[in-house]
Image (cartoon, rainbow, N blue to C red; front, top):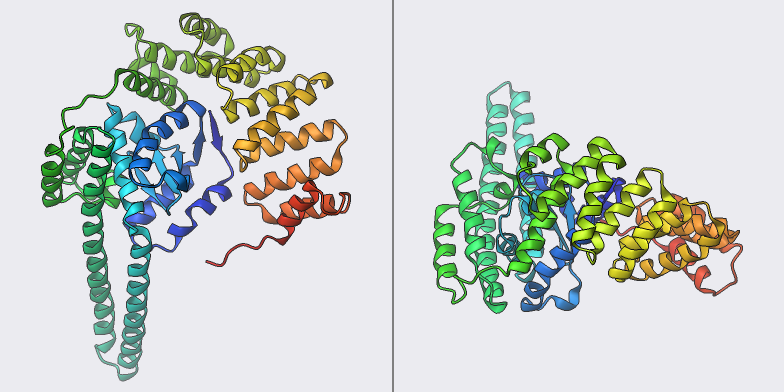
Length: 458
């Protein structure tokens, strides 16, 4: 599991929301920016498997919608455009069943297919124009009132506040229509995949109950997805009318759900909390998984290794057990020892690019020059799938430098900076590399593309 530390990359994903002036939307942006993103193969694969049939039913299968996991415990999910969906870990860990989370994904997909984002921005532009005109008129009134020594200035300020309230109410009313539309679309997508809307209904019933509390206590998802009783009643009717309402989650999917929940909790909660939540009397696989992770965080490798080895003995074909063993060995300064379990993880999950990058890091960390070529092979294969993964490019630059291939190292470094959003440094590296490369070669073209890139105007 990895955290994206550089917020510039996250900011670039959130640019479409930065112009949104409503508090209910800005909450999403500020929370995601503050917490950062998580990259984890096991969690991402589960989210993709949840979303894939929904996207296909929605006609989005070819649009390559990317799901990002935000490192925040609040229950939240949102979309910023037609290609990026954000899910907080709290939405995962607080969902008891797969369909509770799948229903949220289906709802957010409804916003994408309904074109709500584009229309909402259009409404915001209209509102901003109206607000600007109101401000100009109100300021003029306040200035005129002040010059005349009267109360007109106060009246102008009151008009500004009242007018903005009306504008905000109009936008909120527009949002409520969108939310109901997304609900109906979500149930349609769930029906198209023969899945129950019961989980989605339970999730939204929970948020409707939260709506009775004060705003300070309300979860971010409710702030951005208001759940009035009328909307809930409509959702309840269409959900219960579904022929699949009583369909159950597949046991295998439920097990995966519990494992990912345990992993996220093991990594992100206080170890004492983890051992309390998954106490020693709970001998389930998810509980032992969470305790193994928490044991490393509290006691290091000595405490962790017996636990993970026992899990591997029980499930010798679980790539994620080998991955986490290799990760903690690497983080614990035992790079050479980490290579074997990471090689096993790659053999079991050959399409898992993040695991390949981790293996390459262990190979390079061993300081064995005989292993550098193997590291390069894994990195190039990983970046063929994860072509925007800055960590991979950073390791590739390191590997090429070890091979004295300086121009290639500079291009890889430029790509790393580029995908981190550090454009000035990316261009510096690209310019340096381009001077040494053959005109028109593949590496020259990459450097040239970076040098020609210009940030789009907002």
